[in-house]
Image (spheres, rainbow, N blue to C red):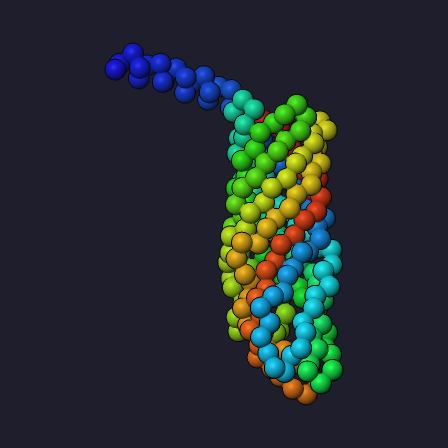
Amino acid sequence: MKKIAFLVFLLFCGISLKAQLEVGVKGFLMQSDISLSDLESNNVSAVGIKNKPGFRAGFSARVSILKFYMQPELLFTQFNAEINATSADGLSQNRYYLLHRFDVPILVGVKLSDFRIYAGPVASFNLNSAANMFDETWEKGSWNLMAGVGYALGDFELGVYYEWATEHYADNAMITIGDEVYEVPLTVKNSNFGFSVAYSFGD
């Protein structure tokens, strides 16, 4: 038993010596992929959304052991979109959708030559309700999933990713069309995809 414990200790020490810590900054140009579904209303015939580019920026830390690594990040994110609602009488109304949130991805990945493949959960903390139609129902937090690929160029890394919304952002809306205000069930999810540029300060 003592020999086994000693061997485990030596293995742990060997892995620890090979571990590398890197910190850096990261920026994203992203496209919102917001979805609206489960509309149930006799007064509102349709609700559509036009997704627009957004951004996110923040800090990252990477702990590497051999070819594997764990990478937590702290990011500020802005979603942009435009919502259009149409009443049963044919009247329409536009609403701008602007959501700010803090995201904390906890990514696990593997390095293959100059490429990195990663995936992991994202804890999201919404800072506002995005549009006045969601004032009463918007959720302040949710969990998403992210996966992507990066390519190292010295201290820089270029990447592409997709983030799936696993939970909804709102399930109800107060929609104003003309002089009328309608409360309608409406499920809203915030997914996104885009490109990232990261710079590492090294060990």
